[in-house]
Image (cartoon, rainbow, N blue to C red; front, side, top):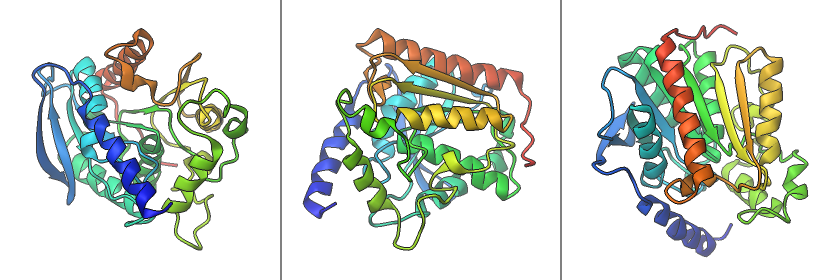
Length: 287
């Protein structure tokens, strides 16, 4: 990916940070475990309900905490949660595993200060994959797991093994297989295999992870990332819910202000998180 193309992509994606947020939302700069973040304060947040850590999308090479704010705010408002959008490091300036290191540092700081049964994670696209990688890194570091995780169109397989990468190219309005490969090449250093569990959580040992909600559109090349992860999670005795939305494209939830399907999906994601937090039972991090 050349510098001009990267700059253009980053400039375009910055516009996602200007999508609507719920009335009364306040955004302020903060930090978590030494990693910059934005605190997203929605009027409906209940200080006792729990906290949402959101990981933005962008293929690990574009996007910022600011571009993650609209989905963070929309999800937090529906679930009544405090929320943080993390500004983890991105490639090619910071290659794998920098993003995982940042997310783990932020998560560690969060659960050091907050009951993990009151913590949930969510992310879109690469942020969904990063959320899963964070769970794996936390488990292997002996940290407790959060109450639950939501992924919107998660990218879980940097080996690019899913048949949908080519089978869905004709209907995906956002990506084709070459785009996804370009992002993967920009993120992974030379000599690092794409099948590393923290790069491709689809291929990891998933035992001990908390309940997952995976939402994906049927019109996206990353469809098999979510369907494959759901199957592997189920085989590892992880509670997992897979929701495939017919005719929907990559991270269609961005359109929740104008599209009923997107609004419905966000509502279901918020209900999932609120239910997990309401149960209040920490997840055993043992493998």
